[in-house]
Amino acid sequence: MTDEEYGIKDFYPIDFDVDLNGKNFAWQGVVLLPFIDQARLLEACDKGYKLLTEEESRRNAKGHDQLIFSESNQNLYNFIIQKLYSKKAGKDKAHLDMTASGGLGGTVEKDPAYTPNASIPISVAV
Image (cartoon, rainbow, N blue to C red; front, side):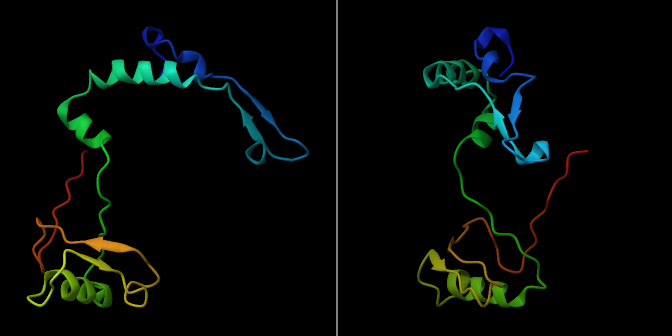
């Protein structure tokens, strides 16, 4: 974004004004940034996309959100298992029961890589 080669550095100023418009604190104001020329931005992005590694490209692509919860949330766990992973489950999607999920709504999809009663190893980069 700030490399001169890409020609969009002016879209990301280091110093900028904040319009307080009667507010007392800077965080309440409106940040006054330059308008972005969409064509220039997309052209710069195209240059940068070509330099991404395969892993970076994968992370940059649209994907699915992951619903992760602990075993202590038995209501939600039992609901998910019953609707998506039991022998009686006939669909790969289910609408969340907001009572079982503690107020979380929406649709969940079955993850073919998940095995019920298994743990998901999480690697943390140090």
